[in-house]
Amino acid sequence: MTRPINHDFIDYDAYFAQRIQDLKDEGRYRVFADLARRAGEYPRARRYDANGEPLPDVTVWCSNDYLGMGQHKAVLKAMTRAVKDYGAGAGGTRNISGTSHPLVVLEGELADLHGKEAALIFTSGFISNEATLSTLASVLPNCHVFSDAYNHASMIQGIRHSNAKKTIFKHNDPSDLERLLREADPAVPKLVAFESVYSMDGDIAPIAELCDVAELEGLMHRLTVIEGTLAKAFGVMGGYIAGSKALVDVVRSFAPGFIFTTALPPAIAAGALASVRHLKASAAERERMHDRAARTKRLLTAAGLPVMPSVSHIVPVLVGDAARCKQASDLLLDRFGIYIQPINYPTVPRGTERLRITPSPLHDDAMVDQLIAALVEIWNELDLPFARG
Image 1: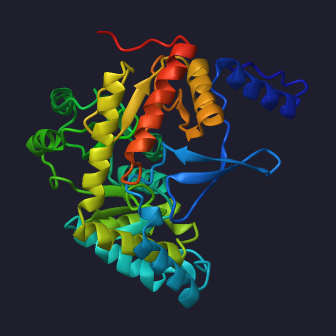
Image 2 (image 1 turned 120 degrees about the horizontal axis):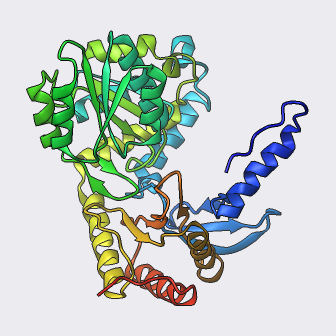
């Protein structure tokens, strides 16, 4: 709970320390594991203690590098060559010498990937969402934004910073969106914002149905602008949007989050380009990932562990308490060498704290079996509830 500040004398450090203590008391204080992924051996990683001394290796089960492309030989080769060809840094913002050739080629590749006229690269997925939504909703006069209740924090921030009118519709509910759109002023421009895959629950948006609803209210295109990240399935770093030339140019010209930040280095862009091109031609990584996710879900369910419903590759296991979720995570790491970060509020609602598991193409059967056995032992030790039935 936030404590009031005594303005007669403000001991800022004491106040900050108390805020951190509040987090610790709630079991929500985040501790970063000092890890070094092993090139060519993923999902294995080196672990270090607080003094930088090596600890036994761990198996990473919570990475957003869903397809293992951060380890792919084509990506590593492209990045290594780019460093030799271009050097390390970007050299400035996109306006000041930061528009490297690999970035330009990558934008063309991403536009082609999504069937759009143009694309624009940002330094992260968070920035691409925040900058684009804040810019579009502020440039459009009297814009009214309709936002899914479970949208990512970056989207919420972008909408908030636009100062546009905002209405939240029920999660993945086209009927509620339709009702709200019909109640809105028909004369003002409207922006409907939602995700495709919600990465904490693993559920997928009814994209066609949401577009059908918006189409009845004068939709510009089925999907006017697509935002994506280069840091998850593509395994590198950065974010992007794809849309019409006019829309992308407005964001490029008006978004402070794009204009006033250093561009991605050429080596990062080259690695992302290699990853995008590979995955446009290959489905093997996705097929293997879904096979690993299905096996993990099946064995978790058979063991009676409380797997939350998910139709995607995300495998959430419900704990329901912040402190016990961290306990389970700590035991997995310290006793079994399994790294899964606890997911607590505000990332997810209170009472839905969970372990978020992300099987990759590189997790073999032995790793899956070890994970299941470790979770069962921890669930019994901590007296955590198993699934009913």
